[in-house]
Image (cartoon, rainbow, N blue to C red):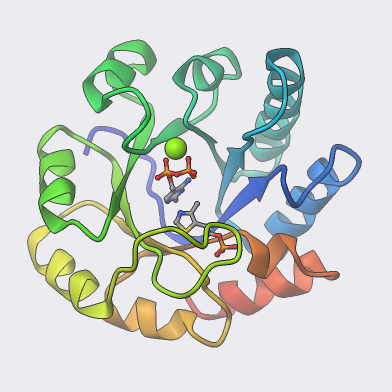
Length: 209
Ligand SMILES: Cc1ncc(COP(=O)(O)OP(=O)(O)O)c(N)n1
Ligand SMILES: Cc1ncsc1CCOP(=O)(O)O
Ligand SMILES: [Mg+2]
C-alpha cells in the first residue's frame, strides 16, 4: 500500500447507466449525506468532454464533503480531475503504468474477481486496495464471475490492504461480507437504483457501526 488514504465503509459507484446527468450530482450528494465514504465514477457511454465535466463536478463535490473520489478504468481522467485514485480491472492499464502516471499518493484499486493469487500479486505491486466479486446475483453486471465468503476469509489472513466486496450487495446480505472480512462494500443498484438514495446509503452505513 502506498497511499495514506484508507478505503473502508460504504463505497458507492455512481454508474451513469443508473444516473443520468440531471441526477448524478444530487444523487451522489445524497449518498454522501447517508454515509458513503468512497465514490467511484463509472461511465461506459459518454464522450470524453462529457466524462471530464461529470468527473470534475463529482471530484469537487467529494472534496467539499470529505469523501474519496475514484475514477473507474480511466487513469488519464483520474489525473485530469485530480481524483484521489483509479480502479483498474483486467482490461485496464497495468497497475505499474497507472502508478507512474498518478504518483505515490494516488489510491489504486484492483479488481481480483474470485482470484486470491491476483490479489496477492496486486498487493506486492503496491495496490492500495483490492476488490472481489460479484458475491450475489447482480443485475448491473450479471455475467460477473461468482466469489464466495471463504475467499474473503482466506484473503483477510493473507492480505494487509483493504478488501472491497462487490456485486448484488443489499443491506440484508452485506453483514455476512463484513463478518467474513470485507473492509468496504461497493454498491450500485442498492443505492442508486433506489428512490430514496440517502436512506438507502444510511442502511448500508449502519452495517459498519
Ligand atoms: C470497487 C470495484 N470493484 C470492482 C469493479 C469492477 O471493475 P472491472 O472488473 O474493471 O469492471 P468494470 O466496472 O470496469 O465493468 C469496480 N468497478 N469497482
Ligand atoms: C462492476 C461490478 N463488478 C462486479 S459486480 C459489479 C456490479 C455491481 O453492481 P450492483 O451493486 O448493482 O450489483
Ligand atoms: Mg474496469
